[in-house]
Length: 417
Image (cartoon, rainbow, N blue to C red):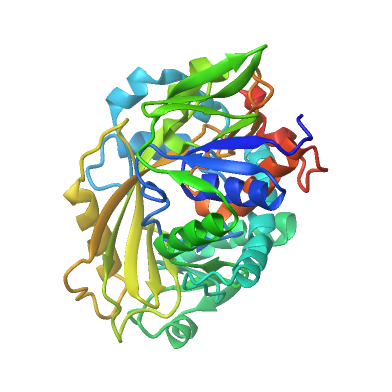
């Protein structure tokens, strides 16, 4: 680990790359951020904006294999896996299947929990300390259920989160749910309110990150795809771009779903699959919800911002498919209409899709490349990149500068695969 104050190139201008740049700059490093498109233009642009310690359990768990297989034969499933993607990437899906046990789920949950709880505290510090205006709200996150069977079934999960991860929810049955959130239709079974969760508007956060980083002297270069690394003495000496070489003492690869493209340079296998998510944003309505909510039986999320209202989620394993599937957008609005009193959303102000970087175990890859000791990975955050970004950035900065890590980095090592 290099302890001197040198130059760091961060490859990737999403929320994770921005957080890495922030904590490195605060530690005294000279930082350049390179992004193949625009700063904050990928998955960091229009996700649902949750900062959610409640999301501690990975997708891989008991029963997940059967649920995933069913999606191949269901046209309107919120989770969709294309058979061709499975056949082209059997190793990833077999790795996922092997991790669908209670023991491995709990192990992954421990690693996820550390990043989520640290990031929740760090967001408070960041937003207060840097006067970040990103529509930050700390009223919690509401899990909503239509059927009594599903509501009661979730009680076991809530008990696990409460007892094993110190993440309790407040149970709201029947009318107590609509008393808290009048925008919901009457007759729903109930909900669970995770009061420790928060939310923000992602594009506003990224705009504020740009302001803060620029103020710290960080250089941001957009439309600068990295073509490879520069090498010297078994280490990376910088990166190659179409506009010229950028020298560096350390390189951080925070490229999300694109990270497998750098496998040869990194000297290790990076098992990340792009999981396509969607969202649609509308103007704020006077009859819209006050609380961010997840309609768990349909896997659809809604987020009320001060400046708008967003419906998002779904998961589509379709490879690197760049098409906007309007059928998936229609699933979002149709599902939300089953829960909300006023489903007249009006004309959309933004229709979006993005690739979530999915790992088989649900845990991100954070730490040094096995082949290059001064190249650092910060990728594979699954559906929780925004929720985990500050802790990831702080951990990367600690490892690069040789400081004592505030989290044990071993669960996130690339060598675990």
